[in-house]
Image (tube, rainbow, N blue to C red; front, side, top):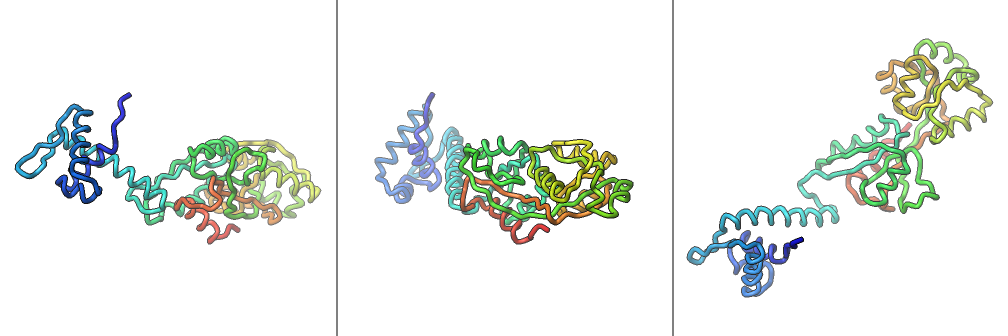
Length: 299
């Protein structure tokens, strides 16, 4: 594989940009012989002449103009890399790769990401959904910038990452209109024997629900366990049973699934986290997510 000498390319680019070897010498703080020699070496490597001398001026050849365009892109991207690492604006959209745990309600994910659409600098968001364990593995090798989830990182997970609490809220029981009318009266005691559709046992919300049911001595009739939260809500919409979702999403769920509120449980708290490889967040987009979530508390 042939390798391009980027020092040679830099000297060529500087001469082409400034318009003369003399000005390039001043900018690079190098001798004229050094710059002229390096450009000649670049021409020998490429097998093409890059400059023509017209009087005292250097004029780019057709190939020289082509090489200059590539050099312009290469060195502007290099400067962008430095600016990004130092937190300076780059003029291009900030790319943010976000991993979303499949246990995170979509309405919550949108609420967390929505501040990014009003930042001074444009942000290009790349979202992927998966199990938290796989998202953390991708985070560890920098394929993701942040993971949004409803559980902090497990100390047993062999990934050096940090959990940043974004907020918490209570939960609400929903049901189709017919079931809601039947079980709203006497809530939460009415849940004893009530048909329910719950998340699967491997989720934080399910563990919290099971603990609360046990403490309240409530034994609902578990008719379905569903991993996909969208399908779970659809089951509830069709009258299969009552289901639970974060209280902060009440309006969205009622509007989207045409269900009614049965009751609210303040003792069950659902928490939301941003997980990053940084103890102190530096990515401006991730900082915007965390700061906005904390400034506008969940209920």
